[in-house]
Image (cartoon, rainbow, N blue to C red):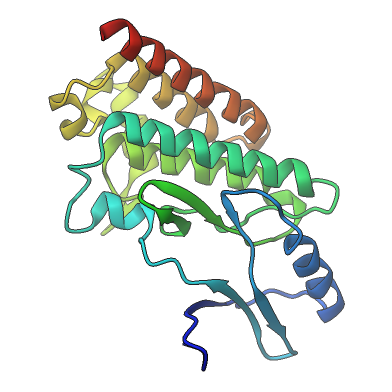
Length: 235
């Protein structure tokens, strides 16, 4: 907390071999981000020993807390999860397109870094690394999709969600992967299957075979449109 009462979240960056000049150049570029769902740092500090990023502290929690906190995802219905997926994809596609030439990707995408400005209003913490990590961002997004679909943590006590989903799909027990709370409330199995296919493309072991985030955003937005048409038809 600052003297004026403003709350900040401070991120310490470890083991990143980059010059002060390059760090400052990247931070200044990121500070220019103009997207409603990308949260740029408000300040940074760089010395030979320490690199820090300061963000506005958002008090409404993260996607991780929504899925695995006290509510355990039970109030997080299919439509909301699909909407979260589409908004994350849209924001990440923007980051990739905006910073491709500068070699800046997110580099640390995970459900705990998907923050809520208001209830179910998503914001990405912006973090940058070298260009080779763009496809790693896609893999990380695919992992978040699997969290949304299964309600399970990515890795926990030796459990690896990506490996588990792939093994279940190989055994043709695909519907076993979905969060039971979604199925019990009548979520569209067809669109859950479609989103699962998007997720599996994103976590493809071969980086070159993963789609771009622009392509992923198109796929998730098309599922949103199908969901909205279905709701309109049902009512």
